[in-house]
Image (cartoon, rainbow over all chains, first blue to last red; front, side):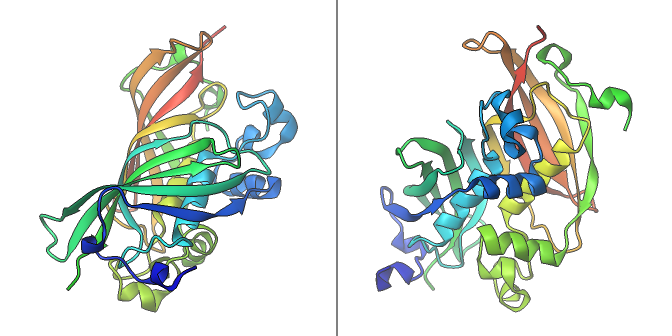
Length: 153
Length: 153
């Protein structure tokens, strides 16, 4: 990772159209089952046989697991808003296709809006689209998220 | 839990205005840190001292942890769509306030829309608002989600 990628980015550093790419992360069947056991214990996230007979026609990760993995990829990437990645509101969150064991995920983020806060003088908001892709570059999640970002002092 | 609560609900069983309530779940500091270590390793989700100096002014759960716990509460509740709880798209996801260690969460869900699918004859969609509340009944997450539901055969 280049040194510049670890410098915190203030509101003034963001501009519409900027793009960020994450590293990659492989999702194992054991990860799918462990997340599901804790947070989404439905048969199609836990058991291969039950999953085969379900809507998913095979073991599939919980959408909330995909969301959590997307956050991990973003936190580990060069996308470093000052004050941290603090989401306040998602305007869109879709899962166009299932994440399967063995999939390798990566995230591409694009800045859609940059605006100062009307109520918090030291802060502003950026709106980003974070698209999570599998190893065939098919989108598995699209998240449009508003983030709180510090202004330069 | 009453027997009727475990009967799967088909599209025809849902109607606008129906409400569902979950059980309760206590969030411990160790849970907050464990989720953050795996999926959202930012200082304000991991370390009490670092969190005190942050926007959150104290240790706070990742919003994705709150989302995952909300799913767990829904899966364990009497809200049982036939085929499972399969979200296709969130129209809104907000975190009006932070979840803190020691908070006790519960979810209230309300059916907002019921519609057959145009492309999948055996299925339809329901739109629900799931509001996650803390022990003071303050909302910590509002999720408006479209779910795929089976039609009665």
